[in-house]
Each structure stands twice: as C-alpha cells, then as structure tokens.
Length: 547
Image (cartoon, rainbow, N blue to C red; front, side, top):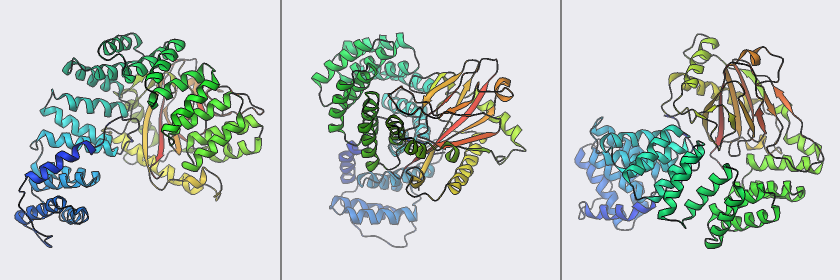
C-alpha cells in the first residue's frame, strides 16, 4: 500500500476516545503491577509487560509507559490480546503510528478473517487520522464484510473515499449512510456535496432541501447549498444566504471563506477583503485564505499589497506553491519582469525526459499499452468534477489505492525521475523553489482521459512542490500534428488582473513515453483538440510533509 494525503478529510481525531481508553485500562486486571521485564519470551511475560505499561498510565507515569511500549514493540508479542492491550496504551499516549502497527500485528496474529471486526474498524480510523488512506479503506472494507450495516463505518468509508477522489464509490457509500440513518441531516448534506462535485445539481438540491427541513440554520447546510447555487450561476442568492449565515455564526471559518470567494468573483473586492481578514483572524495559518486574500488584492489592482501578502505567508511556509504563484503574478502586475522571470524560469525548471523502461516490461511501448488500458478503465473516473481542472474529459481519483503492477512500476519510475530532477537543480540557495526541496514527501497520482474537445483550464497545485505528467497514449492530431492542439501550455493565469507585463506562454508538445516535470506553482493548462482520438495522461504531485 502507498501513502496518500488526507487532504480535506474532515474527520475527527482520536482524542474523543481517550477517556474510554483510560476506563478500559482501569477495568482490565486493575490490580496488576510489575516492572519492565527484559528478555521475556513467553506469553505470560508478554502480558506482564503490557500490564506494566497499563499500570504506569494508571499511576500517572506516561514516560515510563512509553518506554515499556517501545520495549514491547521491539519484542513484538505473539499474543493478539496482549497486542490489543498495547494498542490502547499507544492511543492513550497519542502515538497513532505505534497503535496502528500494533493493531496490524494483532490482526495478523489472529489470522485472516478471524480478528474481531471492531479491530479492523479501529485500524481504519487510526490509519485515516495518520493520512494513510489506502490502508484505512482496506480496513473499513474488512469491517463492513462482517458488519455490512454499521453506519459509522460507512461514514468513515465515505469520507476517506472522498479524500482520495473516488467519486463513484463515495456516492455509493453516502447513499448507504442515508439509507441506514434516515433522520440524519448531516448524511444528506454529505451526499448533496458529493452530488454537487459530480455535477448532479438537481439531485443535490433535493437532498439539501431535505437536510434544511431537519436543520435549516446549520452552517453546513447553508454553505453546501450556496456552493451549489454558485455552480448553477446563482451567485447573488448564494452570497445573500452566506451573509445571513455569517451574521448568525460570525466565527464559522468555512462560511466566511465561501462568502469571501463569492464576493471576490462578484468583483466586490472591498467586501471580500474584509471577510478574508475576518476569517484569517480566526485561522491565521490557513493557506487558502491567505492566497484568496492575495488574489483579491491582485484583481483589485493592489499588486504591491498582493506581493506583500505572498511574502507574509512565505515566512510561515517557505516555498508554498500557492504563495509563490501569487508572488509571480504580483510581480507581473507591478512590471517586475526580472523578478517574475526568476520565479517563472520555464527554460530551467520545466524538464522533458523519456521515461526509463519500468521494471517488468520489455519496452516502453508495451508499458504504455498496459498503462493506458488501466487508465481508461479505472473505476474512479468521473467526467469533469467541479473542484478539478478537467473541464472536458474524465478525471480519476488516486491510482494508489490497491494499485496494479503497472501503477507500482510507474511510481518507481517517477521516483527515479524525481531523484534525477533533484540532482539537476542548480546550486541556488536563495531561490524559493530550489531551496525548498523537501526532505520527506509523498506521491499523489491520478489520470485524465480526454476525447475530442477535451482540455483542462489553467491551474496550479498549491500544496505540492513538484508536479509531472506522463503520456502513454495520444490521438493522431496530437502525436503527429503541428500543434498546439492537445499540447501542455504554461503561463496563462486562471483569472484576469491588471498588469504591466503579460505572462510568457510556453507550449510543450506531448509525446507517447514523455514525462514532463515542473514546479507545482507554474500555471498550466491543456489546449483542446478537435479531432477524434483518445488522449491519456497520468499525472503526479510530490507533496512535502516536512512543512
């Protein structure tokens, strides 16, 4: 299994379970007391070690409990009940990684299909909080195999599937939650939000209406319906509803953010700026709000303040792609062609390379055939999801959930290409992109399948450091044509703004077997193609974790 980011998961952490865990620790053998026992090998000694950790927690000695837990992890007990007790100790100590690893071992010690379903459920929750969403999905599916009507497991499943952008499966899970919890207004909101994402606007509206009948003043209902109305071209109604929501709930950051964005798109810049600042007073580290504030300033003709806003956020998160993109646009607006060019150095930072033949394949042609077949048939594909850049075409969720061999091989090839990219960067410590090379990061990988007319709108990847796109299959008009139909284009921003220097536009012609690497803050899009054929691309983000 591969690690996938828990971006926008919206799930509660494990803190709510801590009191129950303490109660359990007191309830199981409350009189047992023993110290750490070096060199134990028998199950009785393993259990004594676990009991000593429990006892240390009961007596208010968490450092001692942590030391015993570490000792137990090194010995890795064979008894599943002992391992399960150590899981509770790890959770009380706030060590989710240890808890999940021990729970994995406990389930393995029971044997396949034998461990209690609740253990799989807890493993799924712990892995989800860690951001290891592919493993969480597997654990939840194991839970549901035994508890097919457990509504809370279906809730977790729906939210984790949404986090990996598996929209078809998310819809099925959300519908199951609604069926199992017919009076739950929140379940209706979550279903309606996913329907909005899939552009099933009429059905989404019906579910929002049902949720409003049960809880009309809930911010989640109002925000979701407002976002739907914005997609349907009813921005004034959406803004009015959000203004009323904020008046009643002035500290609700999501409502403030949605309102600020709507006001910005209505070009009510002064009002939008005020709301962005109100939201940032509540959550001063939020990257989306900082970048929204800066883009509003930029579009209002206040480029100097936009540049300063980018700089202020970059002091919080060095090299953040959204802030670097904002800074580059602000420099264009100010006429700072040299400063913008230093950031938007396409000649230096956009790298084209033939992919090395992945392991297990005779040549690149056979690999491309296998990869294109997986991409075209991927079960997570959905047409033009609302929150993605694919305006005409199919966009997948993560390819790293239960990946087939060809995807594992592609990821290995991506790793090698990224390592080469690292080595090729110049010694330029003052450059915010070069100097931000992440020490630790994870891959997010997805695919886009386009037919005639397919394209993507200008966008960036604000939380990533490096992005890439690989082409296993192209239509004839792209493969052999003069361009730029179906080509990749860098430089065009997503919204207009007053500027003294126009951005430089750079076109890159796709080739089957070509990998293009570029900084994630570079605006890019694909140009529509007008002939028959299928254009398949597989893209990745390298997302830093050492922020």
